[in-house]
Structure formats: structure tokens, C-alpha cells
Image 1 (cartoon, rainbow, N blue to C red):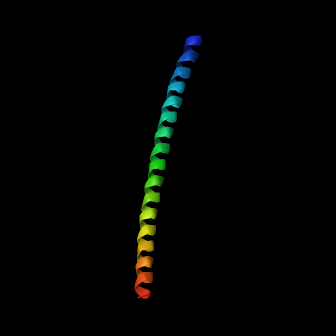
Image 2 (image 1 turned 120 degrees about the horizontal axis):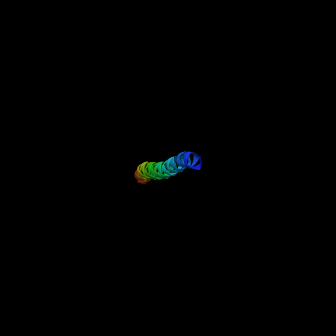
Image 3 (image 1 turned 90 degrees about the horizontal axis):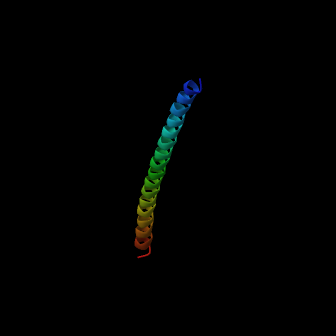
Length: 61
């Protein structure tokens, strides 16, 4: 009977390993997406700062 109980255990372990790899892959994707979002935010802030700087320099002349 130990063979009958051993087989589901291997299958379960393989499934757990597979889910763990999938989870890590998803975590990497989400981290990359977050970094992309931060880059977009930085670009927007730079654009806003450039606009403010232009307004300030135009207003002082």
C-alpha cells in the first residue's frame, strides 16, 4: 500500500513545485510592471518640472 500513497505524494509535490515556479514568475512580472510604472511617473514629473521651469524663466524676463 505504500506505493499507492507514494504516487499521489509525488504528484502533489510536482504540482506544488510547479505552482511555486509560477508564483515566482508572476512576482517577477509584477515587479517589472511596477518598475515600468515608476519610470512613467518619473517621465511625467520631469515633463511637469520642465514646464514649471520654463514658466518661471519666462515670468522673470
